[in-house]
Length: 422
Image 1 (tube, rainbow, N blue to C red):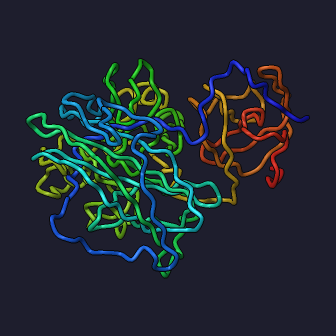
Image 2: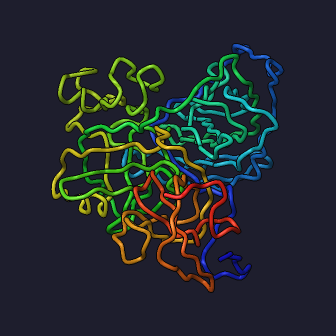
Image 3: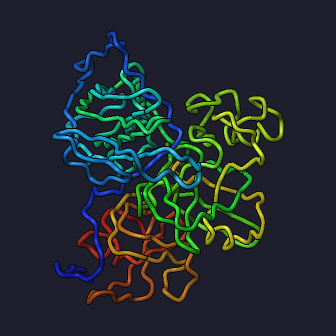
């Protein structure tokens, strides 16, 4: 059966490539050197440059205003809930930029006004030919972003943080250049990292997360202490599988914290953003609390009062069986490739992922809105009807451990091309 959606479908949809903005806290200031930074020849190995169109942001969060062709942070803005920062913040997420060649090193050339104590951070990520997004990497002129693999689509986000006195930074221009390193052989591990970490309940209903989501009762998401794995609002592009005393849940990463904001402990020590002397899978807060690492302080100099490496929203916290803060097993799903997969966009809101290819099966996850999913295989299962369409094909999503009806895969074919049978 072939599915063709009607253009007037009542199901809420978001334009492909559109993503929500993020607001981050306690970011390290971007160094605006007065002299020339270490230069890179952007023609080396087929380099390419482009001007970022700051007036064409995909989304934004916080109190960000337009200043001609630039952007400026106003004196007030929401602070990320989990990090509990009181400083005004805002982020602009630019639309993805398609390149005609593969790159893996990206350098920004930023024109910005940054008052004392204020911060401007440029992060970039890329998508490869298999549809996989890399993690976000901070890019500075004196320290270009090195992506973990070659990409042909680059997305940029700019985060502005006010000074301690409320002074607001502004960006007037951003130019990016990119090259392919001589040895681009970088790949994900076959298996995603799984670690045992201490979980705390985030709560904070009514607060705003680092990606602009307003927390509601019984919410389902997590916070991790680095913006490198932060999903755009409404997406599950970076998700974890959390297993507690009674069950497991796959939840998106929508906030930054607890304790730290630059501790991507799920990465190997060699590429970890900070605390590189700690082993992979060990949060800095855990080392500080248990072993007195860093004098028992977090990255901001606060005394660490628990070993938390993940915050769980209330719905996730209680769903996995926690009644008090405690240890959970977490799989960082974007860190591995596993079996061969093909990525496809989805459509629709509140789309359920089921344990088996039937709507009567246990729900294991839910996609809040359109996103990109990795499909490992597909089967014929229960016939599903939605918005005047029907389809009996279901796809297995390894990142969520369950099946999605192919009716919500945003392609014309009912049976996905190039995807094997389960």
